[in-house]
Image (cartoon, rainbow, N blue to C red):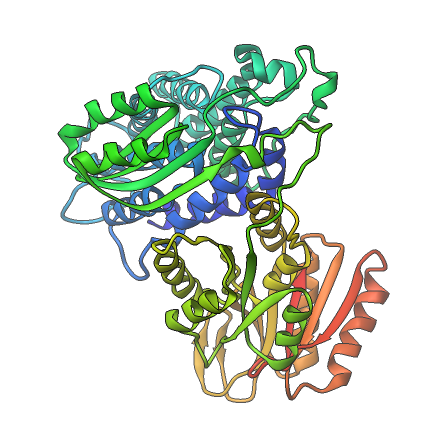
Length: 540
C-alpha cells in the first residue's frame, strides 16, 4: 500500500503538470481539447477514493479501482479506469488474502516482476475488450506495447524495477508511432493525446524508481490550414453521452453491441453490477434508453460537441445559456474579490462548512442553466459534488472544479469567460486552479502531533498543499519558509491573502523578501478577512 499510494500521488502530480500539454494534443476521436483534464480528474477521483488508515493491498486496489470507475471522465478517462482496475485486480489475485505482505506473492513460482508484467498484459486485454471497435494508434496501442515490453523483460529474468522501466520505455516508443498509425494524427502533426496521458501515468513509476523528474515531449500542434487535408474536425456524432449503469454483467455484451450500432467511441467498463458507459451518438435518448432496458442509469452527463469542434481559423462562441460561477468563500474580503470577478458567493471554509442545501439554494437563486462550483476547501468538495448531483436531476448542467484552497478558486475565477462555451470555460478554470500551488500560515491552538512533528500552543505553523510542513516560533519565519518552498517548484505569480487579524507588516515583509530574492515573480496582496489563517498563499 505504501508503494501504491506513492505511485498514485506521483502520477496525480505529473498529470497536473502535463495536463495542458496533453489537452493541446487532443484531435482524436473528437478535437475538444480536454483529454489531459479528463485523465487528471479520473486519476484524482481514484486517489481520493483511497480510505485513510491501514489497508491491505487488495483493499487499496479495490478502493482505487472503484474510485477511478466512478470518477472517469471522457473516452480516455473511462479506458484508463479499466486499465487501472484490471491491473490492480490481477495483482491482488496473486497476494495472500489473509494478510498484507506488500510484495510476497501467493504463488511462490511467480516473481514480483512476472506478476506485474502479467497484470499489465491482463489490463491491456481488458481495455481492448471494453471498447466496441478498438483503434490502433491510440492509448490502447500504448497500453499493449507497455505490457509487451514488460513481459519481455520479465521473461529475461529482470528485476521488478527493470520491468517497470521497460514498460515505460516501450510505452514511449509506441507513443511516437501513433502519428504513423492514425491519419488524423499524421495530418495534425501530433501523437495521440490519450497515449501521451498513459505515458505520463506510467512515467510515475520511473519517477519514483529513479528520483528523476519525468517529462514527455509534446510536439507543437500544427494549425489546421497548414495540414494536408484541411479541417481537423471530423464529421461524427454530435453528443458525448456518459453515465454509470447498475446492470447484470451478462447483459453487457449485447448492450455494448447496441451502442456500437448507435454511435462510435463506445467504451463500457466495470463489473460486479456497476458499469461506466461512454458513447458518441446523435440520438441521446436511445443511448440512455438502452441502459434503462437492462438496468439503472445514473450520473448521466451529455456534452454537445458542436461548441468545441470549431476550426482554429474560424473561432466561434455561442452565447451562454445563463451561466453562474458559485464560490465558497471564507471571509468578507474574499467574498468581495469573488463577487467582483463575477461569482456568486456562499459563506464557508474552516470552522463554518457550507451545506449541500446552501449550495442548492444558491444554484436555484442564480436561475442559470449552467453552473460552475468552486468549493475552495478540501472538505467542501464532497458537499459540492452532492449539490451538483441533485441539481443535474433538475436538468441543470453543473461542473465541480475541485479547488482545495481559496487561492486556487481565485486563480480559476480570474480566467472565467462567460462568452466561452461551457466546456472551454470549465477546462480553463480547471487548468488555472490545478496549476496553483497553495499554502498558509496559522498559529497552533493546542499541543498536537503533525506531519512536521510535535507542535505546542502558540507555535507558528506552515501549511503546504493542505499538510503541515514546518513548525517555528515566529510567524514571519513560517511564512517565509512556505513561500520559499512553493516558489522552489517555479512560478510567476505569488498571491498573498491576509486574514482578519493579520498584522499588515507580515504581508509587507513577505513581499519585500520575494522582490529581493525572486525579481522574476510578481506579487499581489489581497485583504481576505478569513479566520484562523493570517496568510493564505498561492503560486501560479
